[in-house]
Amino acid sequence: MVGKKIRNRRKSAPKAVRISRLLGYVLSAETRNGHEKCIYASARGFLTDDPDTQAAEMLALSVGGVRSPDTIGHYVLSWRDGEQPTPEHVEEAVSVFMSELGLDGHQVVYGLHADTENIHLHLVINRVHPDSFKVIKPNRGFDVEAMLKAVAIIEHRQGWQRERNARYQVLGDGSLRRARQAPDRPPLPDQPKRDMERRTGEKSAERVAIENGAPIISRATSWQTLHAQLAEVGLRYEKAGSGAVVFVGDVAIKASRVDRGASLAQLQKRLGLYEPPSHHQPVKALPPQPMVPDMPGWEIYIAGRKARHAAKEAATEELLRRQESERKRLTGEQKARRDDVLKGDWKGRGAQWNTTQSVLAAEQAAEKAALKDRHKAERKRLRELYRPFPDLKQWQRQHRLGDFAERPEREASEPARIEGDEGGPPTLRDIRAYVPEIHGQQVHYTRMEEAWMGAPAAFVDKGREIDIFDWRNRECVLAALQLAAQKWGSFRVTGNDEYKAMCVQLAVEHGFRISNPELDESIQQERQRTRQQAAPAMRLEPRQEMELDRPGVG
Image 1 (spheres, rainbow, N blue to C red):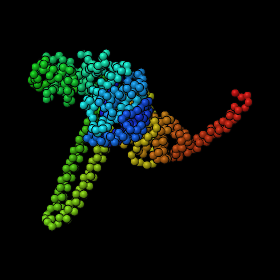
Image 2 (image 1 turned 90 degrees about the vertical axis):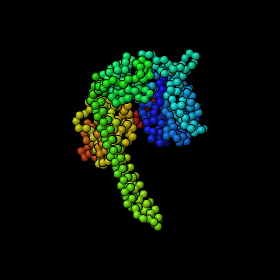
Image 3 (image 1 turned 90 degrees about the horizontal axis):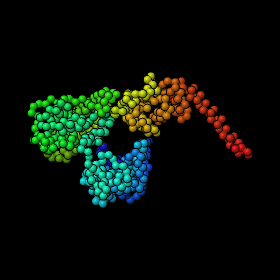
Image 4 (image 1 turned 45 degrees about the vertical axis):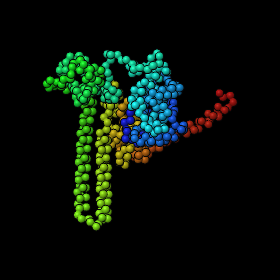
């Protein structure tokens, strides 16, 4: 069993939004992911059994924790492939988990999810104590440590297979202790860095330091030898406060994360008091390093990713610098205006001074609010301009590289297209089996089953037109036509004859209004053909029923 804490990446979201989204996902996973389904759910610490009322109760108690902007904890317990927990297993696991975190009696909503991979349990816990209204820090803030203890206890009690290299284990007498790791097992980068490595295919600075620096540190016989050998592989070891860090380029990594014997205290036991390099050590420049050698297209991908990141940083810095300059200029101009309007002798005119000052203050407050709104809109446009760069797998799929090299190419000629009469930016629409995602001024629609693997868009809404790339797929064309009908009512279609014929059939079946004059005759012929096919079937069904009712038939 694996335990994981899901961190809140949108801490600025209101408590009501966070609670609503989390409980909606935990109790109805299929609405967010067609592959995932909640097969068992329950809750504890509430007055009612109704999920909507429980959400209101959780929000009301969370609001009581006024000193904490985020009072909700989200954790996941995942079983191994093939392990099938029962509702009784789930209830026992929740009891153990809440006890180890010191949150017995707190509100918790939990749901067991099944998908194509592992069965896993989501727990949404309110950290506000139901009686004292204090926001509790589980295990004095070390909730992940308590979670790993709970995992070991649940595995032992329920007989699940223990994870390799698990941090805790239960002994034969039932006592819990920290498991001993093999001395030759190298450390791993922490989980967020490993997640980034999977997304980009690039080794994290921490992994580079572990792989290149740990062997040198363990063999070092003097400080100067250590500095010289680390510089040859692009690393630096420096004292920082009472500890030390290893630099990979400009990225500082805590020395003990590189190797258990790399801490300042451990090295000073071996090498004596810390010595900085006796002379300037030229440090080798390290290029980005792939996780897998000879990865198709990786050099192009990582160069593009880093160029996008650099461009975004430069544009953001320039925007923030300009906005700060505009705020200071407005402040100066408003002060000068106040000094000019309110200067002079106002003796005996106190009431007039008050009204003049009030009107001026209101006018200047409106100016500040307008500037703030404009700056907010500019930052939003910048975020839309620099959307996140695609993950490596998505990029390889788009360029048909690696595992996607043998996939058939889509039509390279003129794209299938739907055109509307009205402009305006495209908007997100819930079109059944397709997931929308904003890319700048466009909305890309991808099949829900393929979105998790970074598949390219099946069709793209560009505002005045919709381009269909997977136009041979009848379901894809139907979804695009539904979007067009919702946006414009009637529309034109452009593309090859095969695509237009499919549009005609779908228009007749679903009542879409296609405005192409050259397709009017085809639409009428398709309607006539459809009526002719339906008429014999309607006449045949009663006759068959009569024959079945005759004596001796069947």
